[in-house]
Amino acid sequence: MEIIRLNDGDKRKYLYLLLTADEQESMIDRYLDRGDMFVLNDNGVKAECVVTKEAEGVYELKNIAVISGCRRRGYGKKLIDFLFSRYPDCRTLLVGTGDVPSTLGFYRRCGFTESHRVNNFFTDNYDHPIFEDGRQLADMVYLKRER
Image (cartoon, rainbow, N blue to C red; front, side):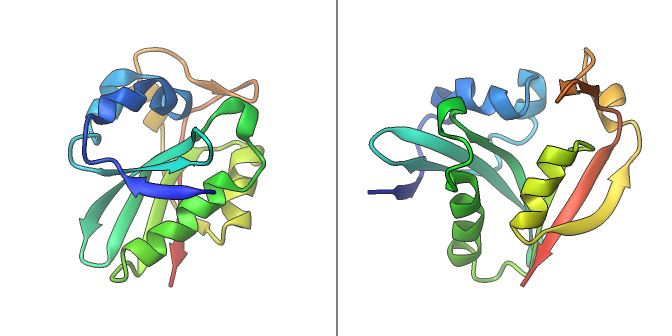
């Protein structure tokens, strides 16, 4: 049975999972303390996400990660859908990600559309090149899902 719960304890306990979605710990440190972390448990932890409130009615999904052997089973989408029920005042949910077709496709299937881009985000903010699906990331693509 799937259970999503707020982790109001030690968020760093899930650092191993956070790092699969954001591989530089100093970048995670920028949002971890001010964000709410939710953990999806289905006979063990399968996924987590961290969300921050950015403005009235605007939240940002800062990190979402699913255990590697459990991907493509709907856990990520369940977490995203859960956030809209958890935050009834959420009119817009933002997420920033790399310009990679597989990741962008996931978010589009979850109801997101492109909002804007931050040029050179990955090259300017990370201390090493970031690669996803064999591509070096440069720009951060922001997507939004509105209610």
